Amino acid sequence: MTRLSEGTALQDNGGMSHGDLMAGPPPTHLPDDPAATELTAGAEPTDVVRRHPASPAAWAALAEQADAAEADDVTVYAYARVGYHRSLDLLRRNGWKGHGPVPWEHESNRGFLRCLALLATSARAIGESDEWERCSTFLRDSSPAAYDHLIGNTSS
Image: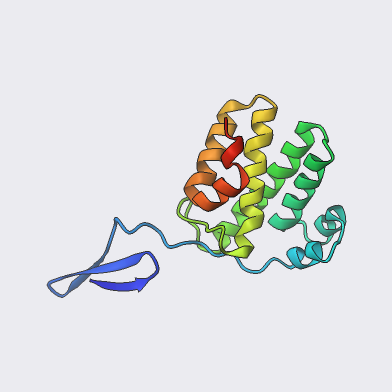
C-alpha cells in the first residue's frame, strides 16, 4: 500500500491502483485569515468585519463579543450564522467536499469552528433544538478537539 497524502492510501491490485475508500477525506486546512492578525492586535470586531466581510474569524469575534456582552441570543445566532455560511464558502474553495476533518490544531480553521460552536449554542438558547443537534454533531465530526474546547462541558 502506498500513501499519497495524509488520509489517502492506494491499494496496488495487480498493477492497478485504487484509492482506499475507508481512509476518508484528508483534513482541510484553511489559508491564513488576515482578519485574525487584526483581531489579535486588538481591532474592534465590527471594524474588522467591515474590512474582511468573508472572514470566519471576524464573524466569530463579533458573535463572541455579542455573547460576552450578553446581547440577545438572536443577535449572537445571526452573527454566527453569517460566519458559518462564509466559512462554508471558504471551505469549499479549499477542497472540502462537505465532510471530513477540519482540525482545531490548524489555527486558520478556528474561525469556522468557533462560528459553528456559537451557532450551535445560540440555536439551543433560542429553542432551535434540531439546529443545536445538527451543528454540535457537525462540530464534533469536524474536530473532536474543537468540540471539547468550545462546547464539551456545556452540551447538556
